[in-house]
Length: 68
Image 1: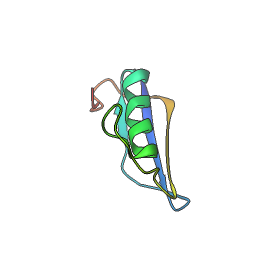
Image 2: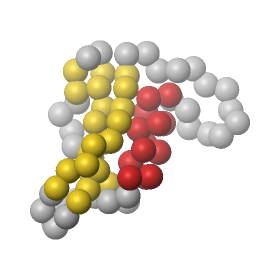
Image 3: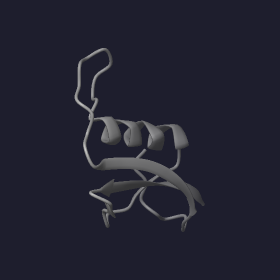
């Protein structure tokens, strides 16, 4: 099955946890929230420092747990 892996990098090191999503939009939403620290629309927030997140496509077994 095609899935999208949420990659989170903290201080230049990717975290070892793997979070898969079936929907690229949902994965990108989580990547945005992790990268920016923003959790509510139209609310002031401070950008995260030394944290980035993005999604990459991956082929995974059909029984892989997804977060959507």
